[in-house]
Image 1 (tube, rainbow, N blue to C red):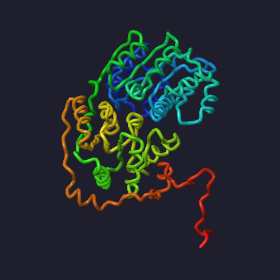
Image 2: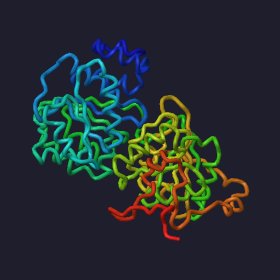
Image 3: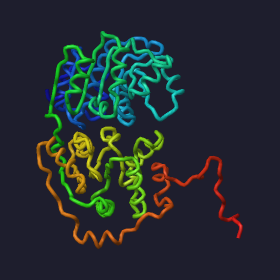
Image 4: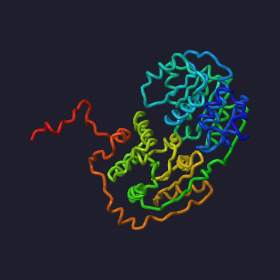
Length: 424
């Protein structure tokens, strides 16, 4: 199959496909779309960045186009489960773009935002709902959403759902869904726990796998730099002073670590923001928008964003800290070299992280090449500025808003004093 025209998709979908630049299906789309169009349950195994969203969105939109139905109050015909807010938003945008010729109502629900608007949103009924499991159950428990009319179910990035602790929520949701439905199950890896979950949700599924589990993208150049933990910040700052690192995604293991990295980068004049679970949804959305628009050179994220960030043109991924779950390494570096482009992944490994490195190399079945520290690293690092104890934002105003670090009153209701009216 060399063209989307050969898939036999409903006519209203074809102009949107051409407008979005879809000409030749990717391997996962070639393998998954035909059985999904035939109504079969499906397990799709492919790494991130291979076109999985279109692999399930297109057959779903085809079915909705061929079998229109009135929306039921408090219900949805299609339910897509996603592990993160960012990924949920991106999936919904893909449905809207590919189904632009159809009069469908597509919405997202996730935590971190007020639930009242989401309750109002479901009252008239939906065609497609993309949700994170926790907030979905909140709506069900409040009687604001019924799942007994779901015709199509998608579990996307199932292995990350387990990593984030959603297993109990998924088991509860299974009991609320109708038995007669089509279910599509996508995951980058297929460990035993995921296989068990698939058996719970799927009936006689077709299984398609376009790459071996836990393989890394071919176009990503990978390197390891052995460095002491205390020297990592200086090394990162020096790397980001290179113009080649134009749009860089940096991963840390902790939320506080991400914020600390951003403070050091700001002191050195590098435009950066952090995105993690402690940031509000508006802050996360502004940071992503600023990163996409080029207002930020670096976005510093925890693993909650490893599969939730789809930004065109990420030149480099830097693992400031190696993940303690080796599969996350694969997902992190998959944020670059997307859509056929090349990319580079650089990982800093401290002596205490050598065990993590061994686990990663065992998982991907290859030894990662080592790279030396930059010349005169110690002397150059000693001259780098350090953040003040109470740093003032040094980023442009849009980037400060994105990072959520713009100066504000220290207590609710406290007003900043105008320096011109200050007592002498």
